[in-house]
Length: 515
Image 1: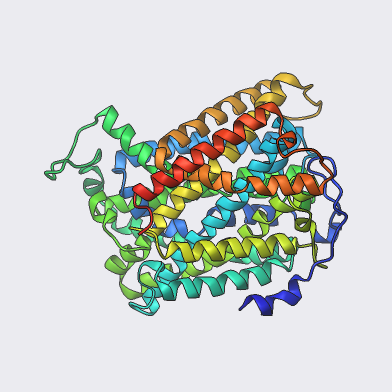
Image 2: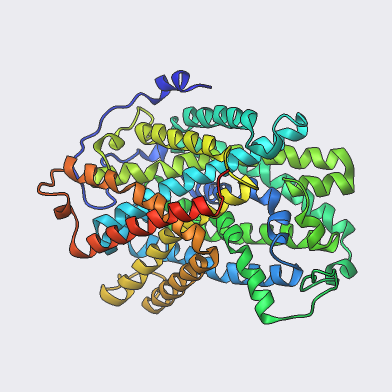
């Protein structure tokens, strides 16, 4: 599908562009179009369970042994629970703030921070869809050996581009249509994962699992527990685990389309528990069949490589079909979710007015179009990435997303300390405060774990978006010099972002991220 064939479905009707209160939509969907608990839960699970789960054994084993992976999942599970709980609490404490990721930051820390979070979330998830493109084309190499090698050769870029524009056309049908598709898609991609888990249990050997439990030395000898080594391994997995949990906010992002804010909270909880169990099993169980070094050397997607080795072509076929279903259904969810950010930001006057355009289905057609264009450009750029394109893309995407989670946790912290706690909420003020503080600290730890190179590259990508803020403010009626559009603190933040971003571009060039 090309852009031209998708255009009729995306024809937009302009909406009033004047700014509204943060988080308020210019037009609300009818009850018939709103999404219930099942649809919201499917969105949360489908947003998280994408192609990444099918390469999870190899992605985790590259950095960590069995013992370190168990610790990594415990730390991630606890940390991400506080992130998930942040969204659950805010959905009840601030039910009037729709499209939470952006509106929480804007309401708590001002227009420019709100813009950065809306823009950063938008861009990071466009980049995540490029990772999906790489994964689905690497999977297609199973069916057409050698044609899509690496998932980012020329043929792969062309194939992923076609999928991108097809998803654009489907996303233009609106959230309700997407939710129905994703209930089916979620079932379709979970079944192969469950088959994999059951199959691996049948060949699991405790002796293999315990051998090299804490990793291997360069000589091949098994290591004993060493806190520094183990925490180094754990830190090495954090970008992977964060990328896999990106989407935990799915129900919150489309909360403006939800039938009930109570359903938003329930869907977040259910989605988190299901996905954590699936991820842990898929990552850890293969270590009872192979050593972590063996798994680390497997081809993408490693789940299919394991099934091929142990159960033959039938096992590999099941997994590869599951990858395609998983990526396509998650891709659609993300197209629906990420396009919400520019839409709401434009309605609040901090993104260009054109992003307020919606079509007859209520889909943010202009935002979807530019999301697709960004993905298309990034797909072309992926062809020039050095090394494993999948690993590089998920690292960049994970770092870009972390400030978004951090500001939501910080907003909850601020609300708990400075505002009157509403009555009738089943979460106490103390719960909100503890959740906000721990969620913020966990986000800071993840940024630290990502490493300086990726942090600075993320800063560069954030800095590129600043002109959109200036255009949005001008179109919303702001007058005066460019500098007058920022408060004193925002000026400092903007200058720091630009300086670090320029340094990030230089560092990326010298680090050979691109060939």
